[in-house]
Image (cartoon, rainbow, N blue to C red):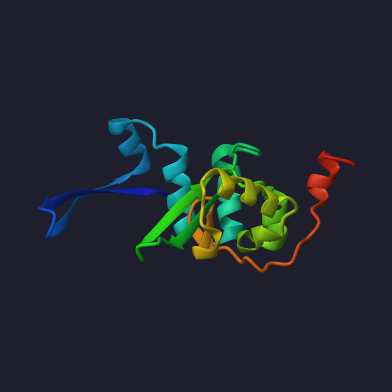
Length: 163
C-alpha cells in the first residue's frame, strides 16, 4: 500500500523515443517537492496494481468512507462511412456503486435505466448505432461492456427512487 514515484527523462523525437529512469521517490518526498498527487492519478495507479477488493479497501483508507465519487464513462467505437474508426465518450453513466460491487462493472448495461440513458446520449451525438463495433466502460481503467448483460434490479436505486 506504498506509492513510489518514478521520475523519467523522455528523449528523442516523434519517431524514436526512449526513456530513462532518473530517480525513484517516495510519495512523501515527491509531494514535498512537487505538491500533492491528484485523486484521479492516485486511483488509476492503485487500480492497476490492486485487485478490486484491495482497491476498495485502499480507497476507503486513502479518502475515507464516501470520499470518492466514481464517474463511469462509456466509450463507443464505431466504423465511419469512410471505413476509419471513430469513437464517442459518454460521461456519468447512471450506474451505482452498489450495482458494480454486486454485478461487476462489465455488466453495467444491466443496470436499470442504462440503455435509456445511452439512447439519449447516442441521439445527441448523432451516433450511427448500426456501425458500433465495440463498447468499453471505465471508472479508472476501461473494461469491456457486456452489452448482452441481463437486466437486473438494483435495490439501492429502488430505495432512492420509490415508485
